[in-house]
Image (tube, rainbow, N blue to C red):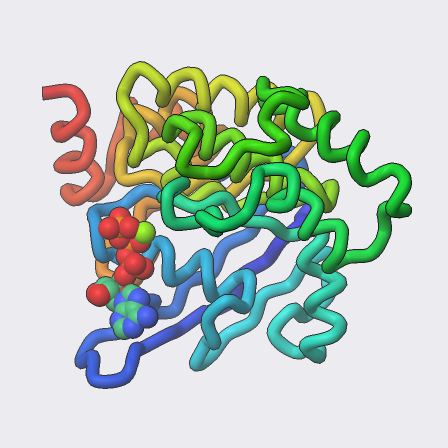
Length: 250
Ligand SMILES: Nc1ncnc2c1ncn2[C@@H]1O[C@H](COP(=O)(O)OP(=O)(O)OP(=O)(O)O)[C@@H](O)[C@H]1O
Ligand SMILES: [Mg+2]
């Protein structure tokens, strides 16, 4: 089943001569992990923001289960954000340094108002446990956590609305290499358990190859190659993809 469809998305930032996203179209199917790979600055994060309406597109459309996300009101979009979540690259920047971990998660329930007050604490603990943390973390501040623990909190926060589709924007690239595998394993375990659909962004084809079903290769705002993961690795069509592959294996 087609869950998300992106049609001819375009974005040029003010004062930029070239578009950051230039006519991008693709579909994401329910339950798949779709990789998005490309060099730094090629437009990956911008594309993610356009899909979730965190930045405004100049042109194009995004459909979620047939609903035109760029055409609905802000109020309607707020409701849709429960189903469409993002996990950011930088766990240091994505948590408010003044908020305790328990409040970081409970804030999500405040916004969406769908968990009765009496159940919030137990639901928060359940979420923290699902990412390998526990009740002891409720009262901790972000500054008292390691990078890996912070990213686990970021994942718990994304899961708090019980989403169907999650964009993972380089969720492990700021982490120590020894922690990367742990967080990747957690993301994949959760994806399988909850039948989640991921758009998984990375500039590292090694990471993409280990977890994705299909992969899109992005260069200068455009998708230049889109294949099943094993095909891209066995038989890359574009010179650019070959260069990305060399960066991993040489
Ligand atoms: N808010 C913004 N205002 C102006 N230009 C921007 C803005 N955000 C991104 N850009 C520009 O758009 C282009 C694409 O940036 P983007 O962050 O999407 O790249 P990326 O592929 O995610 O890179 P990385 O792998 O380093 O995260 C870059 O040239 C960047 O400078
Ligand atoms: Mg980025």
